[in-house]
Structures are given as structure tokens and as C-alpha cells.
Amino acid sequence: MKNLFVTALAVFAMIGLSFQTKAQENNKQTQSTYVKIKGGYGWGVAKDGYYVDMGQGSSIDGQQEQIFTSLGGGTIAGFAIGHFFTDHLGAELDFTYLKGAKQNVQNVSVGGVTYQSADAYTNQYRLAPTIIMSTGNSKTLSLYTKVGFVLPMGGYAMVESSSLDPSTANAIEIEQKINGDFSIGFTGVLGVQYRLNDKFAMFAELEGVYLNIKRKKSTIETFTVNGVDQLDNFTAITGQSVNVDYVDTVDSTNPDPSKALKTTSPYSKQGINIGLTYYF
Image 1 (tube, rainbow, N blue to C red):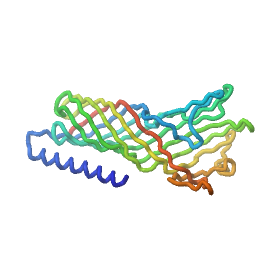
Image 2: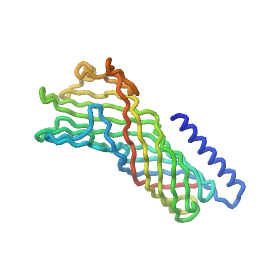
Image 3: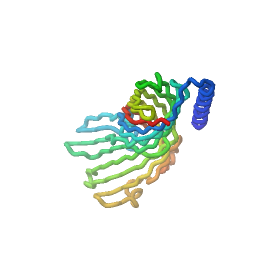
Image 4: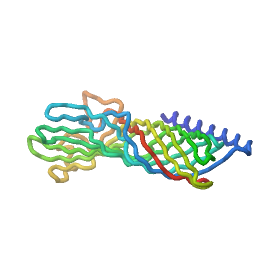
């Protein structure tokens, strides 16, 4: 994966240098450097179901149903820096913060009483190097497309679960924080730009992101029983580990509660962005 990352950066660097050289050789070509700010909202796609260790799905009065979802949906905000080497081709580096929408991933109800439920969401920082192709960046109205990579640079997923023990009537609340391995995804954008003048432009985009992330580790951050903090007694009460490392192989003959098999969760989305561009 690291080799792929290095190769991708090298490809982008060679493309950039190539077009920069061509632009310098032709004074008629248009060059534009810019910064942009944007905001938007996305809906999860490529949905799957591996968010909670104890399983995922819905069970209501004996009827069971799988819940498929993606943590990629939610509100985004960010900024980007870019440069057009010609009037039709450029490169952009995009920084985005995703505040993920909360998704219900588990619900167990019998006789109208919910015995177990879980919600999951993510907060994530992303870096996206892309290549831009435009119908004419200097035009008053232009269409463009962007393709490139998505690199999660930080963040986490959070699972909030609640359960009611039918034998003791104890109400249990758990918050589990999950960190992922380094991953590479892909993004594609179709946009329209309207130039207000030589310095400012407005834009709107349809964006798709395809991204899967493997779990690296998780930590139980909150554990209460009937509203009383019992985090220090979590292992004694549940027999599980507060901290779990996700690995490719586990020993089933001598189980270690602090180790679990890795799973992959989807963070893909489709969404709409709008924003403002400033040209230097």
C-alpha cells in the first residue's frame, strides 16, 4: 500500500512538471493558481455491515433483517489549492473534514421493548490529490471533471450502543472508538464553474468517493451500568478487553480478548458541494 502511495505521488509530480514545461514553452496558454473553500453533504453508498463486534442487523419480534449502510455520508467542509497548467488541464490538492451522519447499525426489539441498539458515525480528515480537466477555465461558464485519490489522514469511527439485560433489568451504555489503518480510495467529480470576474468564481459539484478502511484498533471509552460509570470494571463484568488490536490471524485455541480479526468498513459516498474560488 505504501508503494502504491509513493507511485501515485510520483505520477502526479511527473504530470505536473510535464504540463508546467509545456505551459512555459507556449505563452498563449493560460495559467491560473487558485484557492477555494467549499461545503457540502453526501449520502452513503456501496453499503455493507461490519461496524459492531457483536454483529449488525435488526431483529423485531422474531423477524431478522440485515442493516446495510456506509459511514461516508454526512456534512463536509474544506479548502483546496490548485493550478491550471493550460486552460483545460490542471491539478488540485483538496483538504476535507467529514462530520459523518449517525447511522443505526443494530436494533433488537421484542414486544415493543428495545433490548439492544447501536449507532455509528465517523469524524475524518481527508487529503485528495486530483487531476482537473476543464472545457475552458478562463471562460465565464465552464464544466470540469476531477479524478484522483482519497487519503484519510486522521479521524475515527464511534459506535454508541445501549442494551437492556432482560435477566437483571440493567441498562448498559457503551461508547467504542475505532481507528483505522492507512487506506487509499478514489474520487471522481463533475462540476460547473461560473466566473464572477478575473479573481472570483462560484462552483457546484457532484462528487463520488469510493473508500474502504480496515480496522486497526478500538478502545472502550464509556461503559455505564444504570447510569453509573463502570469503565474500570469493564473486563471483569463483560470478559472483554477495553483495548483491542485488529490483526490478520488469531489463535482460536488460546483466544486473546485484546486481539480480533480485521474487518473492512465502507466509507463511500455520493454528494453535492458548493463553494467559492479565488484566483491569483
